Image (cartoon, rainbow, N blue to C red):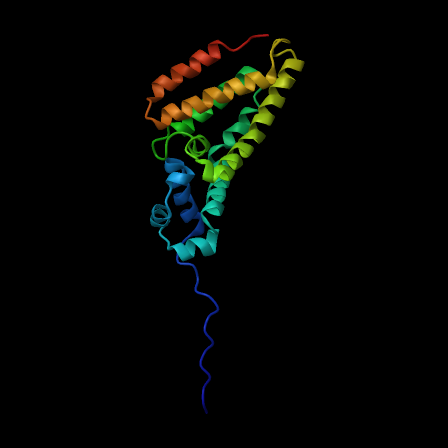
Length: 203
């Protein structure tokens, strides 16, 4: 009796861990920015081929967005915790030292992935730049709301503009990211934080 050959499998199982591959891609984007990260560098770091990358993650832009998701989940979770601090000054202290810890961790890329990707993005990739800015805006809105509450509670002087203070804080964090990415020692960034905190308006 003739035996029937076994039907071929409908698809080969992935020979890589998608989570590990995405973590590797995150580090490349973090170091190089969106434009600076080449597909060759990404696939080498991820340990996969271009067809596998496209099949699992989509194109480069889709991969970058997934890497941003991971970055926010793993690296920026300190922001939500900082907003729970009892005073506005404590919020700022937690935000600045939380940013410092991420930006100067030598076990990973230095600086801020968002800052690197917006500063180094040309006009042809303006949609990527705008996407990063839009993501950052949600955090900015939450920080403004927290400072507004602080002013209503008397924790900030009545003349202080919550939006302006939040923009000032954002400028400090982004400036720290640029300096950290350029190799500034942690000690100098700590002095910057101490100076910013010493200038914080008291009620």
